[in-house]
Image (spheres, one colour):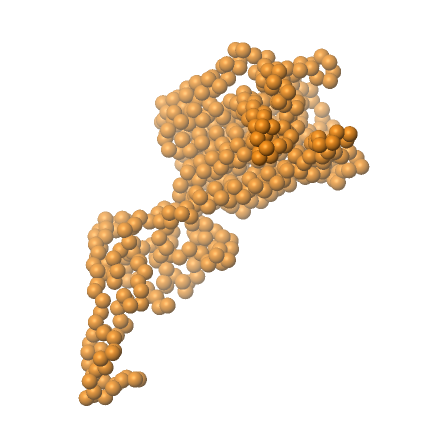
Length: 571
């Protein structure tokens, strides 16, 4: 296939290309050559008559089209053997992985190589980036479910033929790395069909702990508690339907609860992926880093953390689309499902102060407060003790094994009281908020909400009393949006953070089953903290350096530049 160098870069960048059959293409030999008599390789003599069966040398008609150059506004005339396609729209702003990343360009060889310089981007009606990435997310959710499926295996009940029970024998949930709060908290939080038949409900129902004195109830935010209650009711209905319809498979109620919850959480994760892609429309393929995150494969169904992740992602999407009311609604719902989304108020406040949009910030905060009140007020008024259990437990807990405070305690022998630890935690958290706000106000260009939110949430985890492995899911969409220009750093962090789960489960094993000493876990916690701190340093550098970060573009070899469109490259 022969190529020619375009005479005008603008023409090369905007000229439409239509496929033509060989018969429709003009002949390489001009009319002046075919009209004269002469001899060729198989030609006839000068006096011979032309062969009647020879094909006609008449050129096909040329179709002239006039298009407007979107960059210069000038009209240009193009000639083509076939009519132009009805769809002329091209997404010239989209950042393509095979042009952005050299590794992606090399890996694309298995599917035909990097996308061509003259490719019409954004015309596919079937395999759009959103659909492809959501399919990848479904694959990741399937792997996550299989990772937890070891904890919903059933075993026969001895002495009761036909009866089965949940098989957590010999600490299966720990050595199988399949532990999940969804299964572990099912009976503890009184969500079984028998409990529901007696009228139990989260925040209203309380029970006595093993000491016979402490009264407890479900220690979760209201949105999470009511989600678990709704799933329990669905599992109860499924069991009743399975008893009446023989075709519906019957299983343990806890297995039905986990499967229904996992299905809904998978849908929530897909929404988080979709919202992340829509937030940065120039780089939709960044959603693949969220969809295929190792943290999602390991922890999507470990607890209920996907719920606040989805709501924060939707709030960021609404903010990117200048919808303060929608931002406030999702912000309020997110704060009703976790504590960390409250930091988004600070991030948006910094942006609004810089851009003099304080009125929009006020609208967002007021709307969020209303949404939070609508969710929490009924529980707060009717069951104030149960409503406050989550916050009381957060305050009275000491340093958890995943926190840096516990590492210092184990390695240095420092054992502070709970009151001192709470005061230190609040002091350091205030320092993190003040530092991030100062950096955001001093940046040469207004930082994005994802950049500020990533720094705030990372700081919240680093100085907090608890950093459960599943809580790292909070950072995934934020990190992808804030560090999209550094995919290798993101992948390295996700892998390191996901591997913390292995020594974490080893902490709960009996001594004769331990596969690693406890020191390995504390070393993993330190490595995770160092990696996350490094990501924070990269985000701060991108915010504070004189020039705004640019998306690097893959430049083809010099020989390819002769035929590539100069306007397609980013200079």
